[in-house]
Length: 130
Image (cartoon, rainbow, N blue to C red; front, side, top):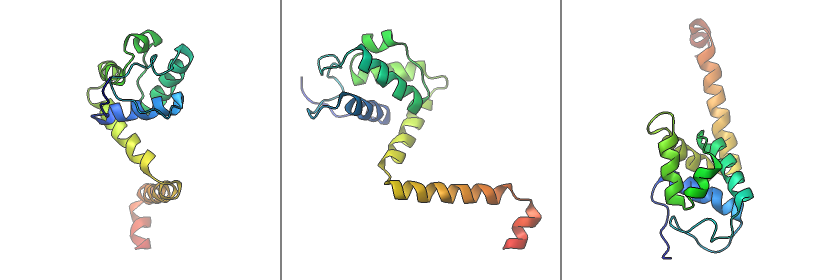
């Protein structure tokens, strides 16, 4: 099967999770079959848990088995999302977060927390600190 790289953020997230769970050094694309790559139902269940945690969409194991390629699974995730476009937005955010170094992630989280604390103060407190 020819290699086809992930074509959108959802496929990128699914590809990333498959790679981590399968632990394969062999390149695989969006049309390769999970079970042909050495996957099994236990690994499929692990992938579904990780995808549910990352993308906030729950799929039954039977859907994974019936959609055993990254392309098909990404399509199934989009069909199961509670709000249209949600999975892709979350996938973009996952890719952004996963690309950060631990230090950069800590720095950005600290900045967001500081901004949140500033916004929760009373208007008079904010102006007196400026």
